Image (cartoon, rainbow, N blue to C red; front, side):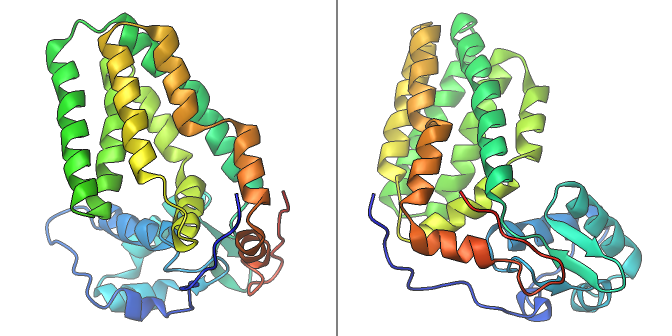
Length: 261
């Protein structure tokens, strides 16, 4: 696949500017709110790989104390999205191809099991109706070019596979490992690489296989949708500009390294 030109490479923007319009809800968990805001900024690559972020700047921008900010950063460090460099500061981690491939592997293996089990236990009418409702909503989002909703509905559908299979807890495992997938997806979007129409058709095929109780076809449709690890590597290797950005990401912080495909 030939690489497209990036026309809007991510640019360095101070976190105080990025948080300018964010207001925390009083009476709700501050740590979770701060974590969610920072997670979204990182996976959308508005906070750049290698960018320094400080408790003080975040706390001042959000009008919060340093304690919940510190706890939110600890949670982000546990997910691998930030790292603490002694005597230097907290930095957004570089994008790592190895972590991305591992996340793809985890998702593929667990979700194969989920859709196979969902097809084998497809007698829950309400669960099937929920899948159909998400497909309709996602189709509407695609037609209206509401891509933010399209993404959220994508997450809902894949989670619904695990719910229908009766293994909802396994989705939590998948979710914790997907940050790097989201960052690579954002970069592909900046390269104008989009599969949204194909994604919708893939989703329809998976849902139909589940409806028919065909575990083998549900697995085949899912593999076609997610793609093989080899396919992911080939696609990335065909995008030299994207690889250049990934390989140089994080070079602004001490001790950062790149990872080549």
